[in-house]
Image 1 (tube, helix red, strand yellow):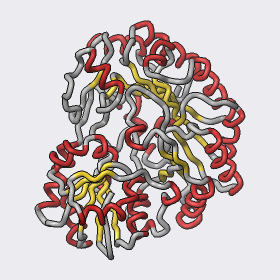
Image 2: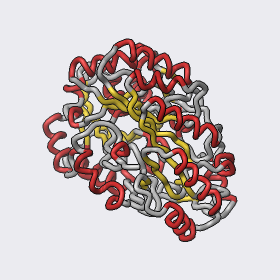
Image 3: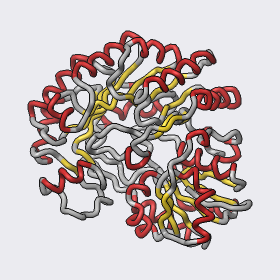
Length: 445
């Protein structure tokens, strides 16, 4: 994300302050920080999730004396309806607080910036921003000095260059506050889901780290720091089953007492793979299911079926792996009948938890944007920086009422957009502070 030459001092600020439904380790900043170190820079990561007052980052700036400051922006908003939170005002306040004590260049990056580079650069009054993956920042700097531009596009990273830093304590002094570390094994997604930004952010061609590289990171973190809990941050760990199996077999060989969870699509060619997942240390899988109604799966361009959803759920249960299904209600063609069909299958397969979003956040460059324009939900050329949602032909009020009536008070269902902490999560937050793994594992069926 940040440019460098020589021995510059670079402060990378992870601006994400969101803690729910669970804290997210700033793996992007860590990988970029490691790449910048390898290019000769002196780098420090400052995590705003643990420092809500801007005075804390001001103190870090006066102590570290950076030559330039990178701000990593993970999300534009919480993508939840109707309890939507727009993060740009807090990011702008952070940038303004930096400006009051430092005149060094501010450079933006991260997935949120890559989706809205021009608008966010203007909103935060940044000097420059890097669109795309940040590990190539050292090479970009020479181009930036030769031909200054406000937005610089980065080439996709060679995944052999992605690794967890060996001096993580020096690079990111606050890393120990996370009970679960993020690990990335691959980037890129060839799926065609109508709403998804992963192909735009990471490309449609899958790029993978070697299994040896991934497992070396885990072994080193366990042996050096005793870290035993991990989350594989790949958009879909099983997008390439061969790659996943290689990582799992390599991890199983180490015979370490480490545990991990991951995202998957609810589709697997061989149910025995779930037994391998278990032996390698997998304790939980979050399936990106979206719906269990065939009509909705088709409209969202999903490549799996109801039978696939049932099969992976059965395989997880047989392998003694906790699992969750993440759903989206309110897409194109959603009706009361398709909602009931999805709820019925969830009752049948009985996951540990169901995380249900209402409405689809509309992002630029997606098929969902074009559908929303055709149906008059948004205007052609309308800015999507501030959250806009597609809520099916049912409309917001009717959709919310149908979902509420259909789902009722199922204790293992969580609606981020409804913020139902009291009925689903509130009494679990305190205990979660002292445990490892995803929060939804604490749900009662």
